[in-house]
Length: 358
Image 1 (cartoon, one colour):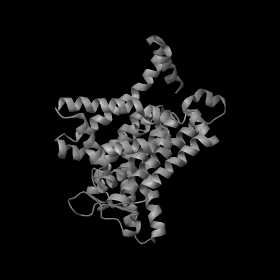
Image 2: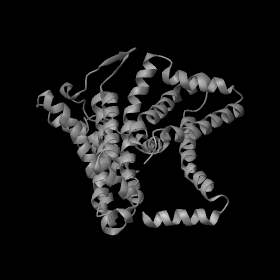
Image 3: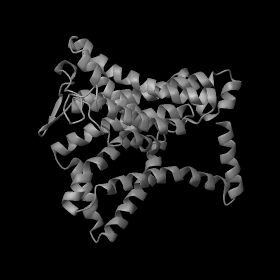
Image 4: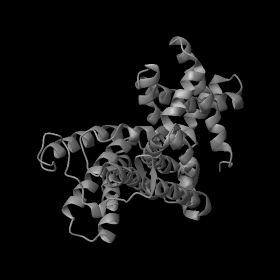
């Protein structure tokens, strides 16, 4: 079990590598490194509107990060969050439009649940293929992402569109829209960020304070030992993977009811893939995912300001996120080197034995 400080300690090397990358980038662009860091801060938290935008972006990032964390707890890697989020958003918008006659106490929660349900259903083929055919979930979820994106694009341009050339659904009824709780500048923040944080705390307590969470974690840590102890490994992996898909679908549904109030083509800017970085920046600990989601949301909010103030391409933020993810992925190798010293052979044997156990 991880110590309370391990998620923070895992972020420190990644942040140092990220700052080093910013310094190198500033040198290559002939600008002050301090100026670049200040621009990132200003674009994310420099005003009320910027803060509202960052909090709104943090919500889907936190939920997709939780999706990756819950699957990884059982020894699985769900990289299909992008497709699950997309279809969850489309399902939420479609349900809200077809069930517009329901009163708001029913329509509001059922709209969100519809998105979560479709996200879980879209994760079902991947876990079925793994359990019945031995196909790795990374391959199947990656391919299902593109199926979901193109399927949603076809539906929103055709039978589920609003009849215009904008490739979007009609605006959902006001009874399904989450009201603004907090006004920041000209923008408003709903209860969605708070809901996502409470959900992450709930998963954290379930994982570390219940026997069910312990069993699911044992399935991911050592499935052979878990089976020997009588724990149904396959059942827990299926449950966690479906919950993972539901969380990604929930992220898309909340984007519809709390931010955009409709679905449109190219709905997600990559929140499903960014959830991988959110989860691994804090060692997949649910209770700390809010911190890494705020970090990535800040970077995403600052991309336009970098272009306006410094003339730097917004794609630089994507490169910075990749650097953060690579630095986190390399930490496992650093820990192996510390344990085994310079013996590459032992390190490879250690990694190979872990792969066999999984």
